[in-house]
Length: 415
Ligand SMILES: *Cc1c(COP(=O)(O)O)cnc(C)c1O
Image 1 (tube, rainbow, N blue to C red):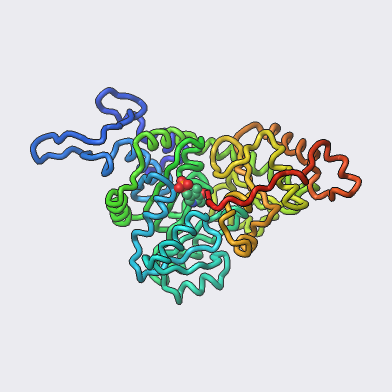
Image 2 (cartoon, rainbow, N blue to C red):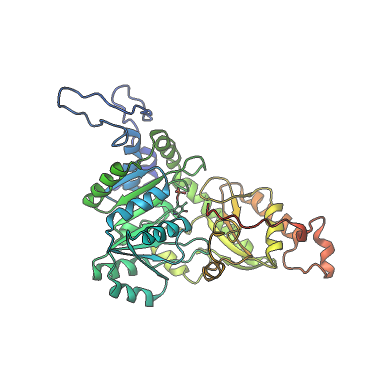
């Protein structure tokens, strides 16, 4: 690390990189090929899949923000997840958490079915699972903290200590907090993975991913694979993602300030049965969050009172929150995991992961908090979640018949 602070790194990295004209912002290099300086004399870049200046500035900036040795920019977050699995041979075991991102879960289990790796699914929030790891002797342990959508935390240091004892590598999907709020390498993690689609780009207009390694050697190995498979990120995507990254710190400050206000509001609400946010003192892992995170993030989940019809009426009546999957953009999004992000899960596994019919997940944006809370107030009072239809309160539903909200069959795609 340069010793500079993160907000400065994010803003300054790659500024004045252009030596030819002194452009303050690095120009966009779309060229797929680069001339040789002379016979047998390659310049820094030769071909766009293998190397590109815009991609490199983004990679170096993210590596510095995470405190890693090397960054690799991939076309999507899933490409970054897949890239990490290139370290595994068919007889190597990968340990994954039972509640990891659904797309990652689908990828890992598909690779296992084809015999490309061995897989062990554990609840990594339990000490008993950590003890089991010593017997499994995996090559790679995957962690994702906080988890989606009920924001359970994994003790990063506890996992890396176990990993050291059995010679395993540890990879952490750091998408939910971004490098502004959590740096797993500091706690002994070897590989950090990001879907830059979320907070890093932050404007819901680029799909991308990144892998950051603690050591140069691991970074070189994975960069070789990224070029080999051909999953490196596009120049324009890298350019836009770097532009988004410039404001990462200031955005995250507002995201989490709004998220905490919403979590506290929901905790007080008579229409809510439970709130999940690591920034609340009532969160069972609040102390762990304070110890390993630099903030509590912008994601809040809660169980609304009543049933799926109350959830549906609530979600479709909001005006300041878009009913949509994904997260991390400046605009507030709200989703119903059971029928949206987690619709592909078997019901039993879904309930086990804490994703019931009344669970609602919010990606809290950076709008004025008064407008967000006013929207909640209006809709809670309109829908009155949890009041039975045949009770006298029913009349207070004022035009909202949550009975009639059409519930289409859960779509099979995960995202
Ligand atoms: C979105 C997401 C991914 C996958 O990233 P894409 O950019 O959609 O391919 C992986 N992990 C987490 C935690 C995510 O939220």
